[in-house]
Image (tube, rainbow, N blue to C red; front, side, top):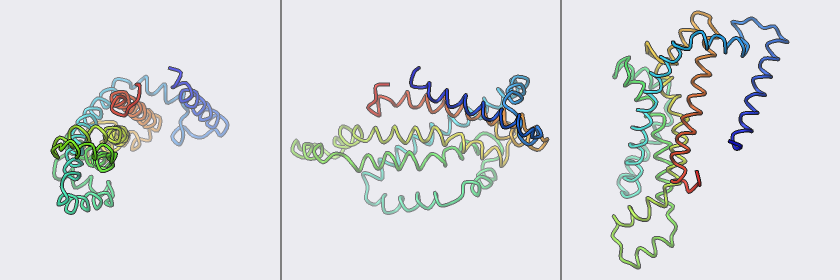
Length: 245
């Protein structure tokens, strides 16, 4: 628990500063609600917020799983095939140059307003970080390991599975941790473009009705969810990254 005390202290300080600013400036509630009002609104609407959080959470978890799996497969293919690097790698870089908001309406048009357009957005936003991180690790295998494998006449498949992939796991862990932060962003962007459920939809609904306190409550719920997801992925990948836990 001691490792989280600085973060907890910083959060408490930030909330206190927020409340002081609201109290001293006497800003209208629809411009900047105070943390006490946001907490009260969250409690009054906890059932609605929980319902929308569940929808967003499902979208994020499915997108995270699919995006991570696709990223791992792509990275292995790029690392083992020069043709794939020539053909696929430039396309990956090109996709990252496209604004995510520009792709969201297209995905909604193709996949509809349901679950899968949001999942696709989450996959799209995390696919490149996972692929790039794992691919970089696969291409940076310590030369001594490879020299030993050649001396023992190991097959390319054995070198991949028993040397290159294990050596690249810390890089994969870093990519997955980044993905855990980015995945909720992708899902919420998809909900902003077209949805009838989810935290992104709830934010838009609250904003349209000038319920800024509810919008802040939904936004902070998304933030807490993202932090918990990141901590869970960090814990799950601790051994992969060579950490104690």
